[in-house]
Image (cartoon, rainbow, N blue to C red):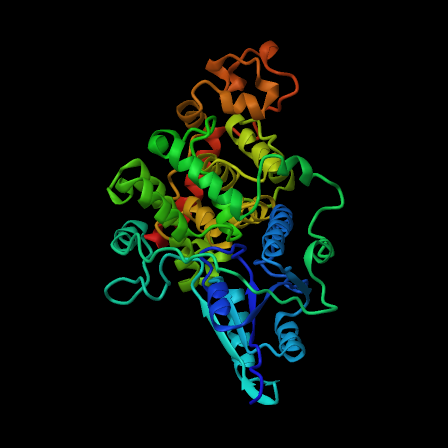
Length: 491
C-alpha cells in the first residue's frame, strides 16, 4: 500500500492579518495537512489602490506582528514581491500546493486582478505523489458583515442611502459567530524562499527619513492589541459614545479604524463583542447602537465601491463633473496640508493627521468642508492627501467620506451645507483643549477667541500664527454661487 501524500494549501493574506475569524485560513487548515502563509507585495501596482506612506508604515508593523504570531505556531510568513499571478503559479509548481485560499476584497482593481488569478489557477494541475491533481481556488468573505450582492433593495438594486441600508443590515445582526483560531496550525515554509522579518524588511515599507517613529508612538499594532483596544473601549467608553464621539479633545472614539483596515480584527468580531457585553447594541439610538452604526457606515462604503467602482476618483453624481472649481492654487493646498490656514480647528486637525496618521472623524468633516467649499479645491485632492497620510486610509471609506462632504456621493450632505469651522470649534471644542494641544501658538489665547484669533486686537494676536487664507463668509458665498451655476442640472 502506498503511503498517503500530504496535502499542501496556500493562504494568500491581504487585508486580513489575523488568525481568528479568518475563513480562508480556517478552510486551508481544515482541508490541507500543511499550510503556506503568503503575503505578496506588488511594486507594479501604480494605481489609486496603492498604499500611502502612512499606511505602508502600519503595514510594516502589522506584517512583523503577524509573523510573530505565525512563529509562535511554528512557521513564518512567506513574503514575495512581484506579479501575484506569476508568483502564485511558480509557488504552486515548486511546492505542489493543490489549494489556494484568500479573503475577498471589493475595490475594482483587486476584484479584476483576483478574477483573473482565480480563472487562471483553477485551470492548472500539479503532480502530487505520482498523481495529477487539479488546483482548487477558493475565496471567502473575511471582511464584511454581508456580501454586497446579498444586501440590496427589494428590486435588486444597490442602496445609495444609508438609513434603509442599515435598517436592513440590522435585521441580519449579529449574524454568524466569528470563526475560531485554527488549532495546531501546521505551517510549511518552502526552503530558499524569503520569509520572516528579513523578508519584510526587504520590502522597504519604512521611509528613509524616520518620521514614522514619532507617528507610531501613538499606536500599538496587531491582532492582540486590536482585541485589547476593543475590549477597553467597550468596557470603559462605549457607554458615553453618543455624547463623546463628536468631541475631539477627549478619547471618545474607539480608534479601531486602522486595525479594521489591515484586518487585524473583523467587523464581525466587533459586532459580536458588542452584542455579548452590550445587549442594547441593536436598540435604536443606544450608545452601543450608535457605535455599531459606524461599523455599518464602513460596510456601506464597501458595498458602494463594489456597485459603483468609479467612485474612487469620479463623482458618483455625474452632474458634479461640471462643477466650476477654483483654479489650482498650490500655496493654499500646501497651507491646508501643513495646518497653516489660519483657522484653528482646521489647523489642529491637519497637524493631528500629520503627527499621528489619524484624525478625529468630526474634524475630518470640518477640514474637508474647508478645502472643498472655502478654498473651492476638488475633493479628489483632499482624498489623495488623506490616502497618503492616514494609517486607516480605506479606499472605499475615504472616497465615500470626501464625496459625502462634496455633495456628489451617496447619501451626501447637500453642497450648500458648508461647515462653519468657528461654530464647529465652539460647539465641539468648547474650551479649546483640542486646538491648544495641536496648535501651541494659540495656547495663551483667551477661550473666547481660541477659534477666531483674528478678532483679537492686532497687538494681542500670536505673531507666529498665520492670518486666515480666506474670509470664511466671503468664501462660503463664492462656493454657493459656484453651486448655483450647476443647480439647474441637479434639480
